[in-house]
Image (cartoon, helix red, strand yellow):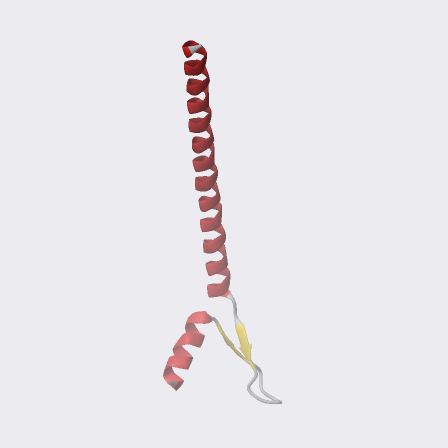
Length: 76
């Protein structure tokens, strides 16, 4: 009877360890993917060009994020 209990407890322990390791590997894979998604989104925002209308017969003013930030700082 004691031997059966030890075997069951040992199996439960190893099963629990396996579940924890699997969860950790999934979490690290998800965090890597989220970091790549974040970096991709940051790059997309930084390289987006904004067209600002200047008037009826004038071409719009084209600015990227850095130029737009400098412009608004200049106005502020």
